[in-house]
Image (cartoon, rainbow, N blue to C red; front, side):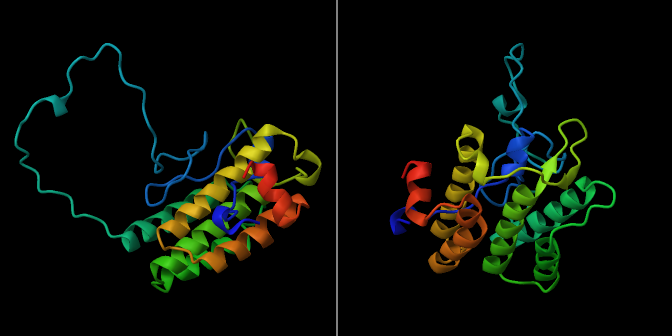
Length: 206
């Protein structure tokens, strides 16, 4: 493992198997999923037939400016949306991962930004690593996907690299400290691949 390239989590090898991506919300830099609910951010394609937009006109707004959210507020909102989304997408009879309850408790206890970011990150990883996503219904079921036997699949590597980079961004923002980030990746990602930290870095191209 290279300290300069701290390895950090990726969203779901299980979702790789289903061809889907993990959680996105505006509070943190995440990637969109093809089944994310309306509460999540989406980028719409521009209408090729539209030449003028309302933003092209310099009209003074009669509406008061929306209060700017703090990082704490954004993380609280992300936690709530994530919990609601995951709960709604679990197939009948399927239990949520314990990381969801940990996130709920952190939110309800009015935990600080670092704790909330850490709990969201852990839930992102476990949602992806322990569930498969039905391509037609978007419902989550316990995964049948085995990471160690499928490391040569490009999508698997892409998912691990995504969450690796996501984690590095959390560290850059001061939301997760270096040692905690390294520990999360070692336990929740690297061990799932069966690689050593050095092999993991090389596998991801670092």
